[in-house]
Length: 149
Ligand SMILES: [Zn+2]
Image 1 (cartoon, rainbow, N blue to C red):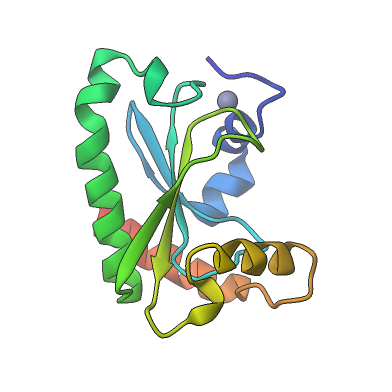
Image 2: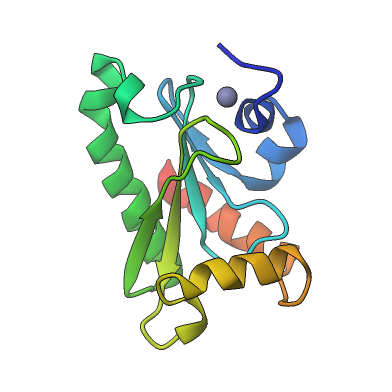
């Protein structure tokens, strides 16, 4: 069930968002690239299709599938970016709908190490740091769609 006041539910039903950033979906999950302004190339987000806040509300099917889906999406981030590690973060504050951020981490990039990532994120949002060029995002989304099939 979609909620009209939920930004994640809106994204799931927004044709332009699907066209620009969605990588794939099945009955349980939707995988997409971080929308513009994108803080990092290959920053993916794994959403629950259902409007649920997190694992506490998983049904049996979601609970059984979550680990495999997070692993598969994380491996895709690594394959797309060549990153060293992947941060997995789900706050659920901006929208109380489970959306797991899968963030490529490069050991040599100190601007995105641990909580410095939050500063980078805010700087991109307020325009003091550059976001990723939408053309670069479109390219990686295309690659991701081919790999995700
Ligand atoms: Zn929602």
